[in-house]
Length: 135
Image 1 (cartoon, rainbow, N blue to C red):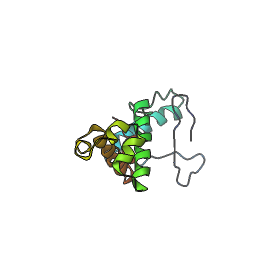
Image 2 (cartoon, rainbow, N blue to C red):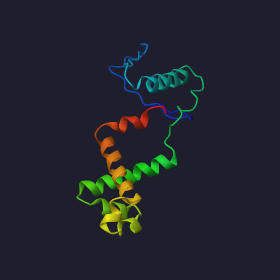
Image 3 (cartoon, rainbow, N blue to C red):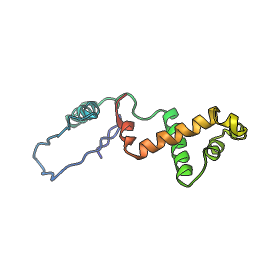
Image 4 (spheres, rainbow, N blue to C red):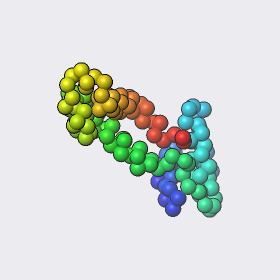
């Protein structure tokens, strides 16, 4: 970690040799723009310039942080066997969760619980990398 008042830089150095120049390898993948932006910030910091603020979308907004927390909670409940009604109740949607079965099927609370579990499952299965991408 390289400290920076605008946001720390995380590095992974493979066989570093003091006094030797550094090289960066950047895969040409869907995270290319994010990687280049981060590298440019580090390059400015390395040569004594102000690195500037992290890319737009970093750090996560309060809304995204709160949604991620709800997603984790919903996923924990789902993986432990909770029903969507129980998840909706835990997420503060008690009124929807108490609806009769026919109304529950089309309720906003049920859709909310399903979306939380669906999105959290996607993150768990590898989409968590999207959190780091520039938006």
